[in-house]
Image: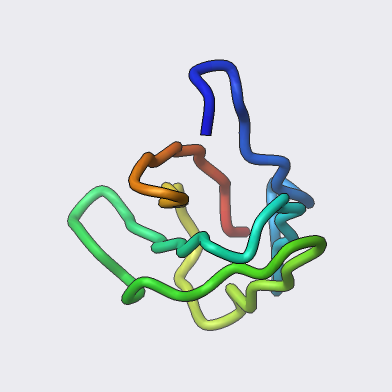
Length: 79
Protein backbone atom coordinates (compact mmCIF):
# COMPACT_ATOMS: atom_id res chain seq x y z
CA UNK A 1 0.00 0.00 0.00
CA UNK A 2 1.40 3.37 -0.96
CA UNK A 3 0.54 6.76 0.54
CA UNK A 4 -1.47 7.71 -2.54
CA UNK A 5 -3.38 4.44 -2.80
CA UNK A 6 -7.14 4.50 -2.33
CA UNK A 7 -9.80 1.86 -1.83
CA UNK A 8 -12.02 1.50 -4.90
CA UNK A 9 -15.32 0.73 -3.14
CA UNK A 10 -18.74 0.81 -4.81
CA UNK A 11 -21.64 1.50 -4.69
CA UNK A 12 -21.49 4.23 -2.10
CA UNK A 13 -24.02 4.67 -0.57
CA UNK A 14 -24.80 0.95 -0.38
CA UNK A 15 -27.99 -0.96 0.37
CA UNK A 16 -27.14 -4.67 0.47
CA UNK A 17 -23.56 -5.09 -0.72
CA UNK A 18 -20.35 -3.32 -1.58
CA UNK A 19 -17.58 -4.32 -3.95
CA UNK A 20 -13.86 -3.72 -3.56
CA UNK A 21 -11.35 -4.16 -6.36
CA UNK A 22 -8.00 -5.22 -4.89
CA UNK A 23 -4.59 -6.08 -6.30
CA UNK A 24 -3.23 -8.85 -4.05
CA UNK A 25 -4.14 -11.98 -2.10
CA UNK A 26 -2.36 -10.88 1.10
CA UNK A 27 -4.99 -8.40 2.34
CA UNK A 28 -7.61 -8.42 5.07
CA UNK A 29 -10.44 -5.99 5.78
CA UNK A 30 -12.52 -4.99 8.79
CA UNK A 31 -15.62 -2.79 8.94
CA UNK A 32 -16.17 -0.44 11.88
CA UNK A 33 -18.78 2.06 12.95
CA UNK A 34 -18.08 5.06 15.17
CA UNK A 35 -18.29 2.85 18.29
CA UNK A 36 -15.78 0.18 17.29
CA UNK A 37 -15.35 -3.02 15.37
CA UNK A 38 -18.24 -4.68 13.55
CA UNK A 39 -16.40 -7.48 11.76
CA UNK A 40 -13.33 -9.55 12.43
CA UNK A 41 -10.54 -9.40 9.88
CA UNK A 42 -11.76 -11.03 6.68
CA UNK A 43 -9.52 -12.05 3.77
CA UNK A 44 -9.62 -10.16 0.47
CA UNK A 45 -8.68 -11.82 -2.80
CA UNK A 46 -7.10 -10.34 -5.89
CA UNK A 47 -9.71 -8.78 -8.17
CA UNK A 48 -13.33 -7.99 -7.31
CA UNK A 49 -14.56 -8.79 -3.80
CA UNK A 50 -18.24 -8.78 -2.80
CA UNK A 51 -19.05 -7.83 0.80
CA UNK A 52 -22.56 -8.35 2.17
CA UNK A 53 -23.62 -5.33 4.25
CA UNK A 54 -27.35 -6.12 4.27
CA UNK A 55 -27.39 -6.88 8.01
CA UNK A 56 -25.69 -3.64 9.03
CA UNK A 57 -27.96 -0.89 10.36
CA UNK A 58 -28.13 2.29 8.27
CA UNK A 59 -25.30 4.70 8.99
CA UNK A 60 -21.70 5.67 8.35
CA UNK A 61 -19.05 2.92 8.36
CA UNK A 62 -15.29 2.77 8.01
CA UNK A 63 -13.46 0.02 6.20
CA UNK A 64 -9.80 -0.68 6.87
CA UNK A 65 -7.69 -2.83 4.59
CA UNK A 66 -4.39 -4.27 5.82
CA UNK A 67 -1.96 -5.50 3.20
CA UNK A 68 1.69 -6.49 3.76
CA UNK A 69 1.86 -4.79 7.16
CA UNK A 70 0.35 -1.46 6.02
CA UNK A 71 -3.24 -0.25 6.22
CA UNK A 72 -5.56 2.10 4.38
CA UNK A 73 -9.00 3.36 5.43
CA UNK A 74 -12.09 4.58 3.64
CA UNK A 75 -15.72 5.18 4.52
CA UNK A 76 -19.09 4.25 3.10
CA UNK A 77 -22.72 4.90 3.89
CA UNK A 78 -25.18 2.04 4.44
CA UNK A 79 -28.74 3.07 3.54
